Length: 159
Image (cartoon, rainbow, N blue to C red):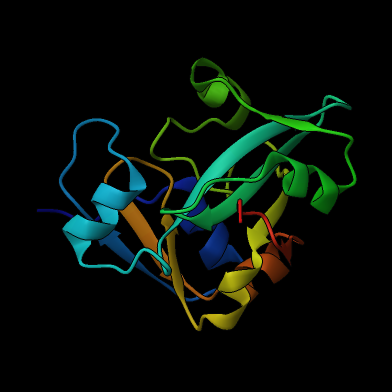
């Protein structure tokens, strides 16, 4: 097998000198983050999913949270100063982000959206996020990621 094709996310990380470890898995179509974590032997607390939402203002935002958790829309809106946010419909993900469902990551999108990472990641030395295509995860430092994309940490999950 030849060299792994680089995704926009990988190019972004390399350009910004952020170390990461790619982790590939066999998959032809979307599978949920819990299944990905299980298949790769990753803990649910260290494996994060990327959700894209649109605020009342019309702006788009990315929210990263552990795969086993559910996004609290009120907390998400509050974290970015919006009255409310609504998750993007699956059919609009590629048009807005340039990524497909299951391969969506906050880095290397068509446009860099404000990104909020659940605060639990701030305690982790490294975590897993999508690498920009189905079948690829990236293991990297949450603090380095948040710094590079000018994101922030906040409480985002339903309690």
